[in-house]
Every structure is written in C-alpha cells, then in structure tokens.
Amino acid sequence: MSVAVSFRHVDVVFGDNAHEALPLVDQGLSRAEILERTGAVLGARDATLDVPSGGIVVLMGLSGSGKSTLLRCVNGLNKVTRGQLLVEGEHGTVDVASCGQADLRRIRQHRVAMVFQQFALLPWRTVRENVGFGLELRGAPRQEIDDRVAEMLSLVDLDGWGDKYAHELSGGMQQRVGLARAFATDAPILLMDEPFSALDPLIRVRLQDELLDLQERLKKTVIFVSHDLDEAMKLGNRIAIMEGGDIVQFSTPEGVLLNPANDYVADFVANLNPLNVLTARTLMTPLETLAREGDTYLVEDASEWRLMPGDDGLRCARNGESMVLPSSATAGQLFAVSPEISLREAVELHRLTREPLVVMDDGRPIGVLCDTQLFDGILKRIDNGA
View (cartoon, rainbow, N blue to C red):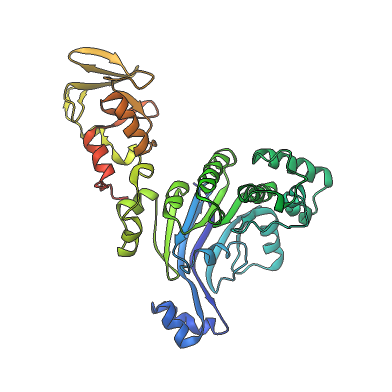
C-alpha cells in the first residue's frame, strides 16, 4: 500500500527559543518543564507515522495533546521545527518541512484540502461561490468551476442551495458546504480538524455516516482530528492517540481497544462499547484450530455441526444431513458472514440463527463465531496481539 503522508521524527516547538528547547525535547522533559526552562512550547515530539493512500487516520487526544498541531504541519500552517514531513506530490514526494514556497503553494492548491471545525465559510459569498473558492484561487476557467461546483453540491445533497448564504443554512448544512469546497479541488489528501465537534450529536452522527459514504466512493486520504474516541473508532482505519505532544499509541481501532499501550490509553477505552469496533476477523476461532475428522471440521461449541470445504464450495452437515449455507440468516442454520462485519452485526445475526456463524473470506471459510467468541468480544476479553 502506498503512503500519502509520512511523518518522520517530527518535532514542533513554538517560540523564539525553539532550537534551544530541542535538547530538552530529546531528554524527554515534559511540556511544562520545557516551557519553564526556555519559554518555548512543545507542540509535538518525535511524531512518526505513515498515512496510507485512501485510508483514514485519526489523530486524537485531549485538548492540548498536539493533534491539531500535527495536522496543520501537513499544509504548512504550522512549521516543523525538526524532522521530515513527506507528502505525495504530483511529480514525486515533497518534504513540507523544508520545501520552498513554490512547492508548498502547489501542495496547498493541488494536493491538500482542509475542512475546519467552525466551517470557515465566507459570509459575503453564496454557497456556490464558497464551494468554488479554491478553484478560483487556482485560476480555473469559469465553466470548469461551475461544472465542478454543481457536481459537488449534488454529491453532498445540497442541490438547490447554491444561491443561499451561510447564515441561511443549518450547522450541518454549512459543514457539508465545507466538505464540498474541499472536495471541489479534487485534492487527494483531506485534512479535517474536528469538523463535527460544534454540531448537535444527532447531526454529528449523520455527517460521520455521510463522510464514510463519500470516502467509499472518492477514496481520499483523510487525516482527521478528534477528541471523541467513539468518533475515532468509527471513522479511523488507524488511530494515533496523543498526550502532551507525544504519540503514545498508533494502531488499528481494535488494537487500541484490546491492547492499550499504557494507563492513559486504557483509561480512554475503559468504557468504550466494543460492539461497533471489534470485527468477526478478530473474534473468530480460526478454521485451522478446530478439531478435525479427516477433511471435516467440527464446529466449536456446537459439535453436531461439521464443515466440509471443497473445490465446489462449502457444505455443512448436522445429524448426518448435508446442506449448503443459506443465502439469508435462517433460524436453526449456519450462516456465512464477512470477516469485516462488526460485533454488533454478528450478535444480531446470531440472535436470528441461534447457531454459529461461519466467517468466509474470498469464498472460503476461515473461522467460526460461536457463543464463546461473541461473549468474549462483548466483555473485551480478546487477546489477538493487535
């Protein structure tokens, strides 16, 4: 998988004495100690992570943890004090930490777009004019701007609102204008700085769902800042948890939940609901660990069920009767599920079938989900080494 953005030992220190503070940063002194000794403020220390192309990485932590500081380095709004910040450009990789103004301008105009927490719409411009603003700055032809704006307003379900002004829209609609403006430039990398935090909870959840839907279609590379762990777990393919300028854990949502790196992360996830985080792939008992009789696998927790994989597909048997898996969840029957379904979906299907679930990947069985695995998932008793 290609990497769109790579942070390599990035330090960010604010203040006139930033370089005097770097030895203290290397010694591991806290933000408060560095401030007291030098008057400089530590924004981020030794930040190292890769953001895969087409993925969503969430930077999260409490207020002041450094998440927005790192995000704003990607488009040069914050200056990197030391380290490399490599952004995939049109003609090769650009180190934003050391590049010239011309390269930085190209990154901002063509590679990176940003969605802000407070919408940042220009009140004297219409919705249509706000969406096309980035294209205007780029010097795009008028017809291209008009066509692109119409396409983006349709994408975010704002057809017919192009001539309105920001004050005439709800908060959720204003944020969708912000999304449309970011998408309009066709920049492959999208920076989102707590874009939904100012919204009501119901609107927030709806926009999270809309973002995931748009991401499924557009395949942007998204770096998303949040202080909400539920939001991070829902949106992120990988999550960087920050404290005092340090990245204390960078992992998958399941890895953060099941194997917190320290007490700080453990406190974060202590009350997190695992139903929407854990997946069948993590919870399942792998096929190769099941008991066997020849080429037949005995399903755990339900010894009367047997699985018989073959070149022509998978058959199952109970009480000597052989059958294929049904196409829909049916009471009293095994049912095939994707390894990526959530624990919540698995529990709902198990409630319908009252039987184990067979986890299938690419048309072949790779594991089973029975009562034990589902209950362990709910109780967060899984240790998968994530």
